[in-house]
Length: 206
Image (cartoon, rainbow, N blue to C red; front, side):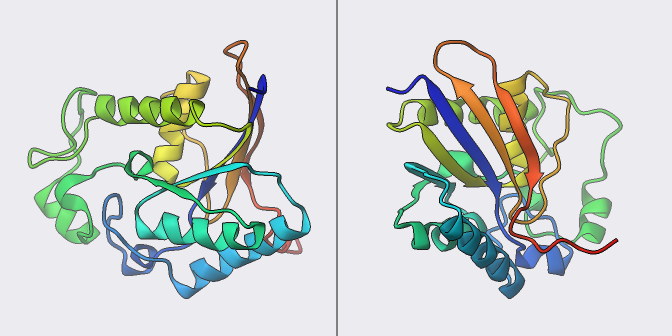
């Protein structure tokens, strides 16, 4: 087994919930046409600049799994689907409008890491971080040394928080942007090579 592991953490393309102005989380919101185009641009970029992935894992929520299928098709790869890589379980807020949620579930001034997201369900922060560790644990056991994971902005933040010991940090992930890391099987240091990378998006003039 290789001592170095290359890891790409990719956020899905734009989803319908972004346009509906509702809470996403576990709401299984599909990609929009724009989201598919974003994924297709990344697929074309990686086809022209082969990343050498040997293992691809994705969330089973449709916005992530479809993104994974689109980017993997030109590379001849089939994603392994795992529910561990789902977005944060926001309980009753999934698919709820922001106006309704503000009335029914106002944001508390303090929520303990052990407490569920709402009184009606949802993950606690401790459960969320534990799931991130479980997902990484399973990924670590897979064969290969060049991994692509297609998931969600919140969950990828939890994963980075565990890898980097930065659970209170927030890492930006725009549509189909990705983080690149180098890990070692011989020590605990994680080398961050880039965050919110979007080489497939056209550069906007200043």
